[in-house]
Length: 262
Image 1 (tube, rainbow, N blue to C red):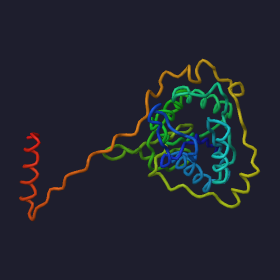
Image 2 (cartoon, helix red, strand yellow):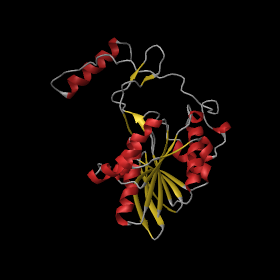
Image 3 (spheres, rainbow, N blue to C red):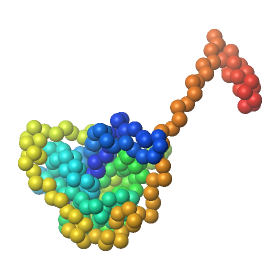
Image 4 (cartoon, helix red, strand yellow):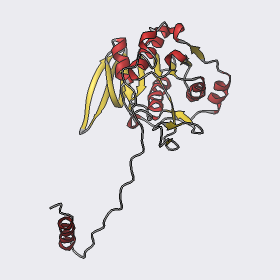
């Protein structure tokens, strides 16, 4: 079985700050990490490989040269191969343009049975690339996968909904997007780290994947981020005290009347 996992290097949102004048993320000095949901996607592929040792896992990403470090982490976790799509022509791509580039890269990779992606990236939270990728490759898809099982080529998944879940069955090839409830990503192994340190990661540019330059990059992106900002801090809350539930309720109603809310 051949599995492709789409991953992304993102800034650690616990360390991110926003320029109050420009309204943009301050990335200088901020550590980059493997996107959380993508780690869950990779872990599920690795679980399949644990049960079927002949499984081959390729991780693919689009980003700047330093994204190699994140791909090395994926190799250290257990992936077999890694590809970085890196080219100035791809810079500034929104989700639509990104999915065009990834689709072209996956076509170059050739045969596959399952494409795993994370639900969304923590630096964008759009949850659009996975579904767009499936559309570009004309593949069936299931998003928000929280449980996965496979038997004789038939895949059964539980898809998370706001008020429950639904059970779906589909055949390969297909695209599945993972959420954190799917599994707990493993740590890198000592042997994996040693392998990753010497691993030759493939780097493909726009010409290598044969992507239409009119469909990638900033100029080709139909959407853009108008402004990023930190929400204003909320005012201090009011605590209504009382010895009984009735006293608390009466005090709450009294405060609402004083503020002319009721």
